[in-house]
Length: 209
Image (tube, rainbow, N blue to C red; front, side, top):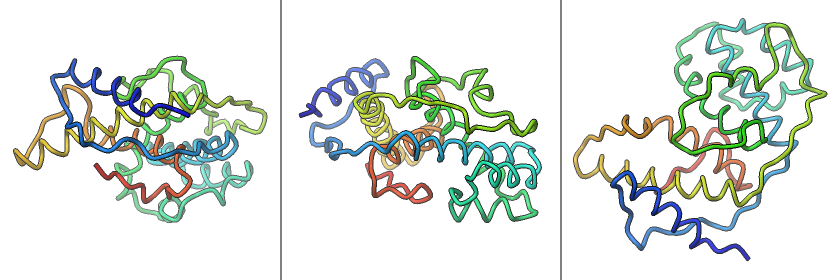
């Protein structure tokens, strides 16, 4: 049986280095059930096509690639609505999800090391198929990281999110940019919560703190 207190102790030590603290009554993580590598791979590859579109890839190119890869039905309703639209109003909402792609790359062992506040790596785009060249993903073999590693990062993200939220409630504002942008943190936490908990819908992740 995993000891959830160990995750929390490491999170507390991490936060202390940033001069941030959490109360002892903050709940520990719920029992988790890590999704399988196939489902996580599909979500990551599908999201990559959507994010690429938000950065300028032609919508038809993205849709054709998804159809050819058998991933079109893996789009969420919001993603499908975005790809089928001819407007770019939501570009920024999907561009920020490049941080999700970073976490997925770590979850699928494309990166050896990861910390929830790390900067985006310069080679992230190379970890995914070249959509402009219509590169296929079907022969890509991916491995899944140990669930305990995800749980540790998820607990740290949860505690950090709580700190940011509390500061905003108390002071009406909080500049977290010296550590990590709060929106960025939530997108990274989205991946971990989705991977670890079966009842989480991608577009409607609960960020309760």
